[in-house]
Length: 317
Ligand code: TXA
Ligand code: MG
Image (cartoon, rainbow, N blue to C red; front, side):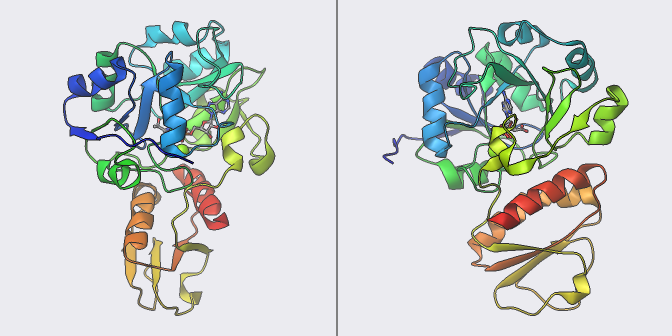
């Protein structure tokens, strides 16, 4: 595929970054989950540039990000009762609601679907940028498709320099895993992607929420079937740290200290920290020429469920 090449401007000014959106460009920006790659949701040409720059499969819909709750009306005219509860509880924050879209939202934003994912980030730089843009922005994670999601502006630069107009530089992201995606178009909310808001937390607000992670072939969650979060190194999930074999060019990330030595190692004190570090660790391992990354399994509680989901997908390669 022929990729367009542009000069990528690095800036800390939300106003300057917003100028690129106004002139039809694409801009990476920080959120509390991972960095996103934004385009005006109503600009079909700019949206095409996102798919091209990321080499993203055209059947994978994008999330629309808002800076102001009033913008929901531009995107959907059918906010269901369950969606209202989730919006009240979790906006702004790391949760995406999927609703019927308005005719104004172009079909290339939603990969041909009649629904749209909507999320309001709580990161301050993201809010400032979204408000300066004055329009909702569609934004997938700002990585090359299939690679680990970017949690620093440097990771965005590594994947997309020369292919996007601008990087709005912020801090390393607060959470490090993506938002929880909840389909609110049906009778009961359905979790399509586990993420930063745990299933338990969603159920506290809407107890009848279900989770049908049919994984690779769920027609309602198209993005989940593609290759995901993969470093170049092989990812091996291990339950027992003491049983890891000694191999060349290997790395370890987990909560317990292994008995053998590794070329790269990261020990975390809890699951949230593990989730925060995992994607950047994958990238560090690739830079160091690691061949196998051993990842300690965690329990499926709280953010542990989303972390295990990402590890399993990364392990599939
Ligand atoms: O935390 C996040 O959600 C980050 C930041 C940048 O906001 N964004 C992100 O976007 O992770 P992306 O494109 O990498 O993942 C979006 C996920 C995909 O699995 C996609 O299939 C699903 O959300 N999705 C988006 N719109 C959808 C829709 N209308 N129906 C079903 N699934 C949808
Ligand atoms: Mg992504």
